[in-house]
Length: 249
Image (cartoon, rainbow, N blue to C red; front, side, top):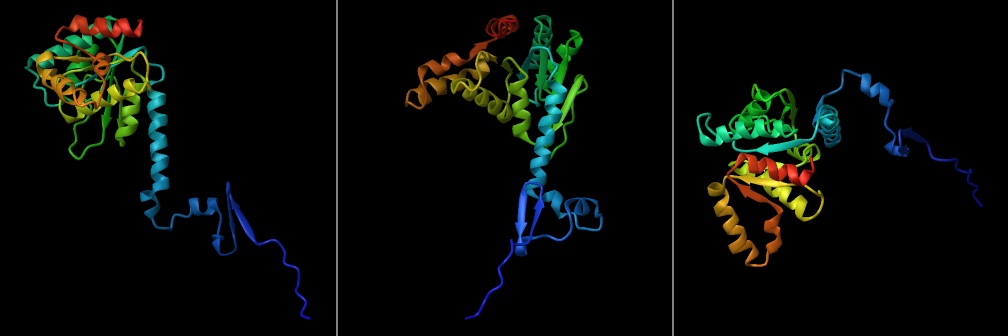
């Protein structure tokens, strides 16, 4: 009868919380691989590295905005002309929000965003711009006093909601609609509470509201009460009064 030597525990190596055994053991150590500058750079394009970048964006955003006073996020088209009524409304809105005790947060770009930042700065308030990396460079407008540029849309969106007590939405395009409907969904599902949303410009937003009522709600895709989750106005003072009333500022 053939005898067998008792087998000891398998060879293993611990890399932080990860245990590797047998053929899965990697040569060298974590520090060695970190300090080895002769390796290739493919790792910067891997998902684990992207996770770290995402984490760093959250940390940078939280750090930059944590000490903001109560704020309102203002959205609107980057294509709004400087000499248009919508631009002037944005300036007046930014001023009025500051006078009511709010900081103003925008996407930091031109057009309606620039207008709200300009009004906030001229009123002596805190003017914030949260930019985004795009194929076509926009850069932060000159009226931003605190600016953060993001790689990832979803990190930026978190900042708009986390550090604002409400939204005011000027006439805008797809990006503006995206922010509006995301905020509306968060309120509808009670992911955020006491979060006023004001659409500015009854003529501009009227068709959208009609569609929500006559198509979406009429076909049972949403409830009639969902129309109560936002307000519509043409008046700057009323817009500020609505967000002030619901935030309790």
